[in-house]
Image (tube, rainbow, N blue to C red; front, side, top):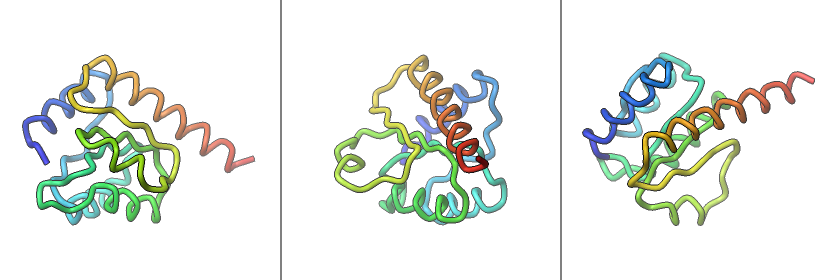
Length: 120
């Protein structure tokens, strides 16, 4: 829901050596990006720009394809109050660049471990 923060996050992701496929401000934009690019990781806020739910957007995307998720939010209690599909991690705002990079690495490891366990 905050374009400046989204741009900062995209820059940090690129610095960490990853490719950003896009920034979505609404649920519909998130659905379209995920369908078009099939990301290996989702970074999501709980509150989106049009007051839609980032949680619902992620749940819909995960119904089609399981990938790890890192929620970055000023409202962590909203995520903790609902049942979540794993693997997901939570970072609260304000966050440090180092913490975001560590969370991305952990989420990708969780995703790879989850994928490996499904192949067994």
